[in-house]
Length: 298
Figure 1: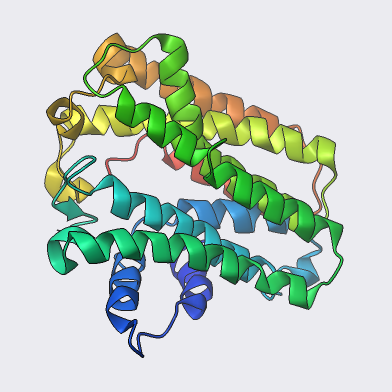
Figure 2: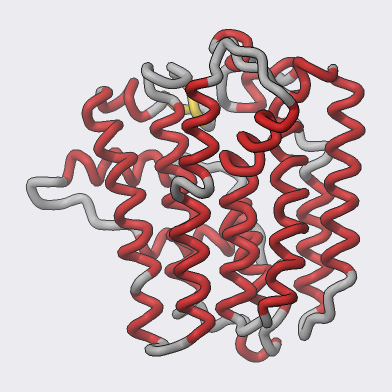
């Protein structure tokens, strides 16, 4: 497979910083969080969307897509470190291991999250040296920055924090989900396509598909927080209840939430299937990956 976890990790691990020098403590914490496992969905989505618009003979050239794949996982991991902090969700377990603030202290955890976020953009910027003045890379880098910031993930996180314990309207809930969760998935798919020189119209279709994927993924997370097995999930269940957070599952119930996940996953698959690509195998693998999100138990 083009985007199995092992293949993707071989690529993204190449870009981790070496823990040495006076700053080695924070780098240890950064690498600990990054290497703790997970589904690696975002770099997998990115690679498949890149490969869909790339000639088969060129899909193994990782010199440009590699830094962006590592960067999106660094951004995602930085958000998890900060989400787990006592000031936010106050969780002790992530991916089956002690969270960064539990293992290294709250101070180093804050700095490790900051470190990964900054190092992500430093890593992605390496692509400019490989393909100078490349419009696709310029557009990809712009998307990467925006979707992680105040008009993307950070914006969603901020609304999520201030609304903790308060009743949410559907519009507010959608805003949080679209930005806190969908934004990085949108970024992954858009960046991969832009680097492969897909046109703007096609990338906008992928953004819409990725938004549906992100919504399905988050609502499935809501379901698992209520009915999931902590040993399987690798993080505490009932975290939303503990932090007095309203979710799609708590508002509309489990069955309605499951139906929503299926509908959003189907919407994403239909959009992707409507797009003409160079590599049908990559498109097929992307759709199969999306399908796995429906029945996942972690």
